[in-house]
Image (tube, rainbow, N blue to C red; front, side):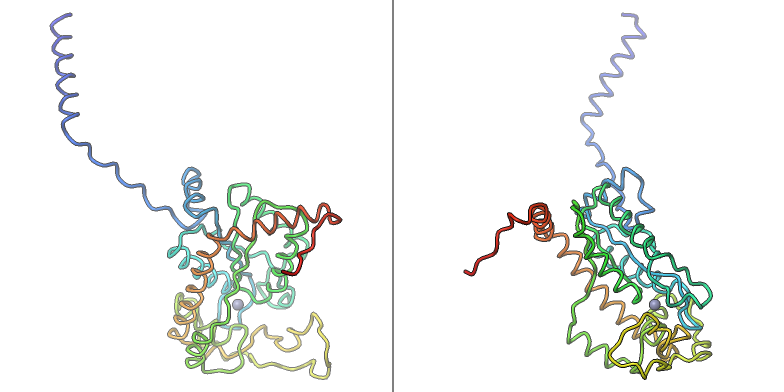
Amino acid sequence: MKRSSFVLAAALVALAAVAAAVPQAPKPAAAPLSIRYEELTSPDFARAVAQSGGTCIVPLGILEKHGPHLPLGTDLIDCREISQRAAAAEYTIVFPPYFVGQIFEARHQPGTIAYGSRMMLDVLQQTCDELARNGIKKIILVNGHGGNDPFLHFFCQAQLETRRDYVVYLFEPAYDEATEARLDKMRKTTVDGHAGEEETSVMLAHHPELVRLDRARDESGEDQKRQAGLKNAYTGIWWYAGQPNHYRGEGSAGNAEFGKALLEAETGALVEMIRSVKKDTVTAELQKRFFEDAAKPLETRPFVRK
Ligand SMILES: [Zn+2]
């Protein structure tokens, strides 16, 4: 061994000894995972799926007029806010704002994007299929748009059409008497439903710069009752008959304090739902059994009285 090599070897041995003696600084903890799907890297997405227990929220809104004073994306913006607040409290992934839904009734108003009915079913189903292919077996639909309600109930029913290895859960807060009584005390108007006191208040609570409160009385949000003569019947034009301005209620009554209370109530209910969805094994099991029975209905055994 040449002297220089010997010195080098000795130095390396000494260094190794020092390295062994000095306690290694703990590795910095991995940065917390974003709750927003689009912000995750691909490797972090895999961690997020594990951390969320294979759950993901799809926040559904729409692009439609919200009276003369609220933004077109009000439902998207509010629904995303509630979803993100809940996900921050109980980790889950929040899908990007989703705006393919049912909004034919506002096609006469500027800014409405109304996709076809088959398309909206297909896009939502394929979104769920793709999430499930990526390990998300519990999909939570959080809807911010009233016009989507029948569509989303039908969508949930249609999950029984063919066998699936995932479950779709629709967020539906149960009626809570104490919460409703507290909110009712804060409420100033009796007619509401679209861009009225509630929605205006919620937007004032988290994005006041998007509210043009001074324009809230530019149009009427009163029910025009143009189908009042029709009894015991439902038609698709019912909303337009009553609310041709695509506005129901009195937006000028909105206030941030009421909005804050509404946001907190919704968020609390969603946190509770996410926790119960994570624990839920019954629904997937029932779904599996149902599809097995549905494949051979003649072999389905009846439940007998105990
Ligand atoms: Zn809305």
